[in-house]
Length: 86
Image (tube, rainbow, N blue to C red):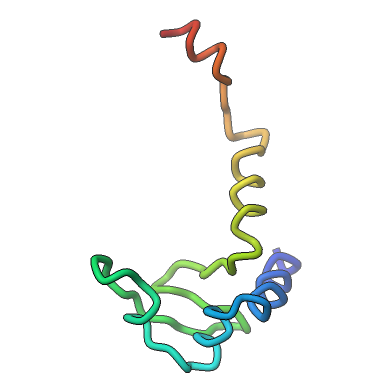
């Protein structure tokens, strides 16, 4: 898990918006569309959180999604099996 947070720190430096928030050059309201509620941004152990959720830098989003989608416990029957059941 520690390696993941190290990767978040590293990727955060490449993400302009993340880096601006890290340097407190931007407010939470500037980071979200006008129709969404802004969450407090807090810095903890070298990474950022929006509210109580870890802010994943843009360069890691696909990696996180793939890792959660492709785990052995994330059961996915696949298109053919789903069609068969329907």
